[in-house]
Image (cartoon, rainbow over all chains, first blue to last red; front, side, top):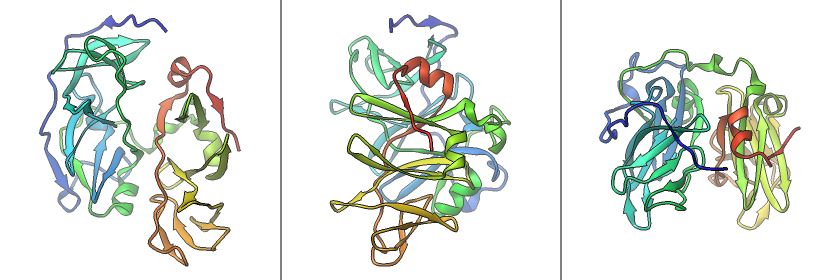
Length: 74
Length: 211
């Protein structure tokens, strides 16, 4: 398939060092029925609520856990 | 979920502002290369041809994730949207769970997985368990091989039981909680949730796995 990207909006700043909460600190930032992308690396688990990842400024979160650099994307 | 390390270099990704076949094009700020989001493949610039390693991730509900991963942390940004909830999968045939084995790609629809939430697969010698956690509407793919032995699983009251040792395993995390294999973990195999249409746009030769 030919690579023919179509320009639709200005490039967005990369997201690094995004804030996270421990599960015990969650009140209404995320609710039980909301969809999340969950990842486990080594002993650590982290969830990325899809309702925080939509829209061009939010689709990629550059993160790191347990010495592994990764991107959570939607 | 992609690893950001390519040839010993850690890359930082941003939204390039371009779409390719209606799919996100990412850019890394270190080399300004363009990457296809759905393929994880460098398409233009110094990283053209490079492949990002996929890290297994699960799309499920927060309630279910927090229950099965009590030590989890969670991203804390403001909401940009409200309606990505359990009800997102209103039409289960619009969504597939897809994976790649060597040169072949496979997918199963949410409808098929709901009908049969525990499928023992043998795909040209790759023995896998396609599990579907109905509480979180979440597909998970495991290897059925553990220490060189291939196991066969059956769903029993929400848990898995293997035919060989009758041990009990959690479906959502693939951990053995009772029996001879207690403490063992099934290896996760990478699969991704996608819209059926975009999956087949990018992987037209996909073999559909139906119960």
